[in-house]
Amino acid sequence: MRLILISALVGVCAFVRASQIGLLPGERPFRHTFADPREIRMALAIETDARLHAAVGNYFSLLSLEPEGIHFGFEGAGYFTMRQAEQRFPLETADGLIGAYLEGGEIWQWQLRFTHISAHLADGSLETPIPYSRETVSVRGGWLPIPELHLYGGIHFLTNSIPELPRFAFQCGGSYFLNPGGYRMVPFVAFDLKWRRETSNDPSFQAQMGVAINDPPEAYRSFRVFYSYYTGADPRGQFYFRSYTSHSLGIEMQI
Image (cartoon, rainbow, N blue to C red; front, side, top):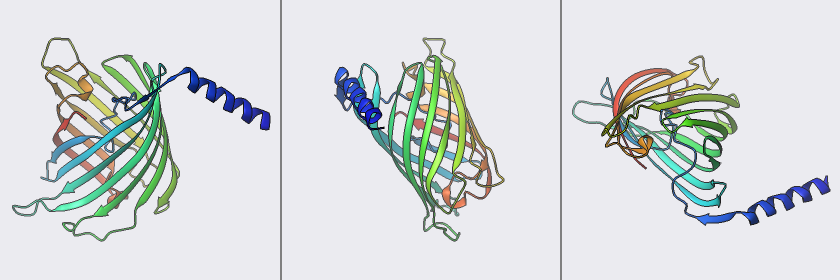
C-alpha cells in the first residue's frame, strides 16, 4: 500500500512539474449549464404571476495547469425572489451558494465541484421558515461535438443536509445555438433535467428558448433574452417540498 501511495505521489509531482502553472487564467473550461436554475449567473426574470427572480453570481479561476487546461477556482451566487404586493415587490426568499471547482477539457469536459447552499425567508415572506443547509459534491461531464452544441450529465452527492434528504441526485441537459454567422441575434434552446429524489415532485425540468444578442464569438456567454418554463420541485430551498410550475421572461448578462 505504501508503495502505491509513493508511486501515485511521484506521478502527480511529475505531472505538475511538466505543466505550467498559471495564475488567474480567466474563463473556466466547463461550459455554463445555464438552463440549470442554480447555475452561477447574472439574470433577472419576471413570472406570469408578477413574481420577480434575480440571480447575482460570479466565479474566479485562481490557478490553471497548462497545456492541460485544468482550472481550480471559487464561485458564489445569491438567488432572490420578490412577490408583488400592491405597488411594491417585497423580498420573499434569499438562497446563497458558495463553492469550489476543479475542471478541464475541451471537446470532452469534466468537472469536480463542492458547493454549500443555504436558504432563507426574507421579511417580505408570509411563510414560516425551516432550517435548510446543504453541502454537495458534484461530478459532471460535458460533450462539445461542435461549438454550438453542449450536452452534459452528472451525479450529485449530499455530504451534509439539513433537513435529512436522499444522498444522490442525477442531472442531464444541453443547449444549442443556431449560429449561421454574421447575424446580431442568434436563436438558442436549452434544457435541464434533475432527479432530486427529495419529494414526489420528481424529476424537475426547465426549458429555455431565446436569442443571444450582438453575434458574439461565444454566444452562450453573451447578453441573452429568453422565455423559460419550469416544472417540478420548487428550486427555492425553503419550499423544496412543494410542486412548482412557472412561465417567465428574462434577461441574462455575460459574466
